[in-house]
Structure formats: structure tokens, C-alpha cells
Image (cartoon, rainbow, N blue to C red):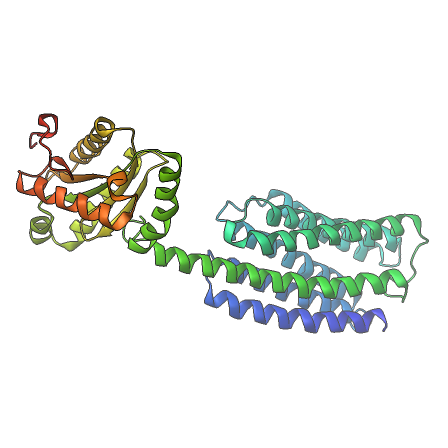
Length: 392
């Protein structure tokens, strides 16, 4: 098949892939990254199509416009990756490559496309290699864990394509001048074939990245509370099993804390549910910032939170719980004072099982509520004067 037929075939395939990417992007609007990829792929397809019309239209129109569309598409694909990773675009180097390509083809149009065509083709190939290398770097570095596998496969493919384009540059530098850049030859045929395969593979892998990210987000929604971003009951059940099993295996002490915002119903009745939601978020953020990385925090429902606390001994657990209580009481709110009551249960006394430990801590929380709120109580119910904390 001659190069023009290969280009026309590649254009049709690329535009079909762009449509497929666009349909997937509409279903998964993560920072509009998929729309960038779809739009970029469409521009590449249009550029390849204009290249196929090399003999039908003026060269200054077909080649300048064609290469501008192709490299503009590469630019959008690269920006789409930055958007997908929710990072700044950093457009300086990609825009410089794009400007190089446009200037190269415009100068070739001024001095004639048959004058040193190898130079123009080599500079275009160098620009293509630059875009491909930058895209590979973005795919291989900093991608979300959920999309890392398809991104690495895609990045590896871009590395291979970059190497192939560099080989092409070497042949152009060492070979004779080409009277017709579209003349048949094994190098042209191999380049066009690999380009078609590259468009298909990379588009499918971008779709795989979108699907992997969509599944990860669905899982996150299933395991996290939408208001506070903390683990919900399902997330706590999933994360607590290995957490408690590790402490049991290593012989480490672990505590289960049940925390409840005092007088929360009155807060909702007086200030409204929107303000109540804001207060829950403030409490959640305060608890998150006060706890250590090895501890586990979840919203159990309503105004109730669960903490899995790694603490060596009753005194350490009491100190940690009181630190949480004190931090919440210092939340700066102009119209009210927020306090919490806490029930603590030694997970070891419940064979490191979450459900019975929560039941024990919840019973202790009830005693704390009945004893005046804004205090902590242990599940064993033993009186400890150090825990008879004043209401503030």
C-alpha cells in the first residue's frame, strides 16, 4: 500500500478512536482529561488526513496545516495527562516544540518543500519524538495508583515509539535527499504502520486509564463518607480487619473509641442542618489533624465517630482521648461551643474484634453522656478521677 493510502487509512482509524475516546470521556469527566485526549486524537486524525491530500491541495496549505493539527493534537493529549493528574499544565516546553514545528513547515513553504526535504522531515520527526518522550514521562510518573498499570503500559509504548522516531531521524540524516517525501519505501511504510498501531493501542490504553480511575472513584465513594471524606462503616470494616489483626499478631495494645458530638440535635434545631453539616466537617478535620498516621478514623453515622487507636496502656489511651476532646473544644466558632463525649474500649478484651469492641465503647459513651458530657469513660466502667473532666 502506498504512503498516501496508508495515511488515509490512519486518518479514518484515528478519527474513529477519537469518537470512542470522546464517548468515554463524557461518562468520566475527571478534570476534563478525557475530552483533552479525545480532542487531541481528533486533531491528529484530521492532520493525518490533510497529509494524505498532499497532491490535491497546495503544499503550503496541506503540510503546514496538517503538521499543525498533528502537533496541536499531541499538545492537547499531553495537557490532558497533566489535567488527569490534577497538576499545573507547565506549557513552556510543549509550546516551544509546537512553535518549532510550525516555524519549520512555514519556512519550508517559503523556500520550497523540495529544498532539503530531509531537514524538514527530520525537524518534524524531532518534534514528534519530543512530544512522545514528554508524554511517556507523564504516563510513567505520578499517575494515580488506580491507573498506574495501563499508564505504564502506555508509557512503555510511547518510549518504543520515541526510539523508532529517533531511528527515522538517523536515516534521514544519513540518507540521500528525498525528492518526494511521500515516495514509497520501507522506512515510510514501517513508520505509517507503527503510527496506526500506536494510535489504536494508545487510545485503548487511555480508555483503560479512564475506566480504572472510574472504578477507583466508585470504590472510594462506597467506602468513604461524602460529607467529611472519612471512612464510612464499610470502609471502617474493611480497614479495621488488617489493622486489628496486625496488633493482635504483634502483641500491641489497641483501643476502640466511640466519639459523639454533644447536644448535636439542639445545634441542628437552632442553626439548621447546613450549619450542622459544617460543624461535623470541622470536627472531622480536627480529629484527623490530631490523630497520628497509624490511627484510623471513621464517621460511623450521624454525629458519631469511631477511632482505632494504637496506644500502650490505659493512661496513654486516656491521654490521647483527652487530647481529641480538648482539640474539638477549641474549634473557633462564634456562636457556640462544641464538645464531644468519648467511650473507650480495650480491643484486646474483645479478642481484637471490631463489633464487640464498638459495643463496649458505645456503652462507655452512654455513661459519659449520662455523667454530664464533655468527658471520657472506659468500657470497664471503673471510676478514675483523672477522667472526671470539667465541662467547658
